[in-house]
Image (cartoon, rainbow over all chains, first blue to last red; front, side, top):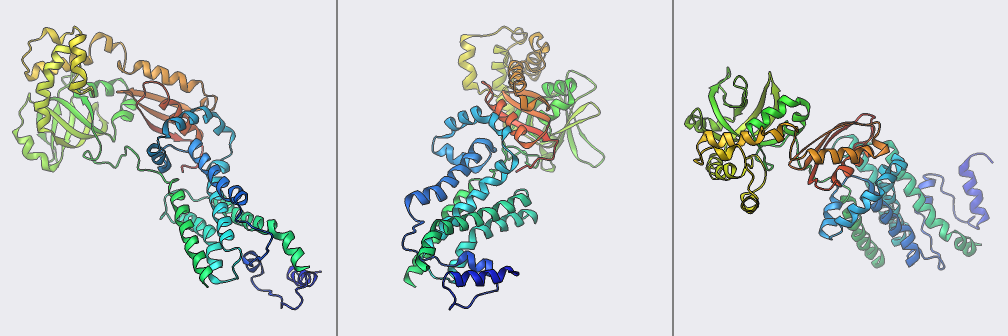
Length: 194
Length: 292
């Protein structure tokens, strides 16, 4: 007992990794990007991609379309697709719901869902690849872009309002995507390595 | 290595897709703005008399309609002057002989101003600049020479139809209506020749006709009450202080709301009232909500 890093060493022994020298530095990062080669786990399956990639994007786009300003660029796209009229009717019917939604849901959640979806997709693409700089780059890219944009807002070089809650949302979304992809394969991993 | 290269390409494609999705959440440029020059946006047509009366009735609501906006103001020149900085300005006549519309011209318009004379009818495209000591102010004005000719043509319609020249309807829209349903007016009684006096008399007759005098904004008064009624049905806006005016079926909301969602809700509600063609949302958030 004691230092949490020693716990990692102990866990390694339990899983039969005693021959592998424990890495004490940057433990958390290496944990997140560690390649997971498991034959029975496929995050690229249709249901998995729909639940973790398409659905968050649809949900985020829905929040933007229904309860955010109609001055957004996405409404121009809806106009091109001929969807503006039904969408405006839907907005009018659901306008009252907006007052039951907290600010976090209206302003931070859609972008956090974007980070979640993008991170999960990148994790899926790089799922069976060995650890490399390229893999690390792509897996950290979504959260880096989102946090970078937020910092840009703080420095007034990107339009929008800086909000710490947004950053918390991005980091939580990135962590959740990483955790989900590991959780979905965890049991297989344990079975293989036991 | 080959599979890694493939993964890089796939990742790059997904990055492009996600960047496009993110771009959808960006704001498009606002339709109107205080930093807009008169040439950038279509001008709002208004007669000098209407502008003056609107300011006399309620300076606050007139400011929300005109200040910072591009206006095409038509009126009779009462004087062409220079101020203490040698800037040229026109005074346009109103029903009050001691008060006029003060139109400050751009430097490039001085030569055009020198060709004008007292009593000429002009249209100046300017930016509304509020009211100072009872006179509505216009700045950065450009004289529209061709508008004078159009006004001459339009004047015949005005005199025959009681349609004010500051309405945004086009001659094509108004002419058939006139043929079918001509309305009697004070202007009809005047001679048909398109002299400056007759034109302005027709315009002012429309602006000050009894039916219009009884209502601040005759064309849009019903619309205003409909929007007001629609806003009052929203529980979320009960704590808000909203004033609204409607001109040419464009509703301008001003006042204070508690948060950004309430501001957008008010705009949504107003935009869905039948007959409203545009909503100018000048509401301010009083509770420190997040603008975007």
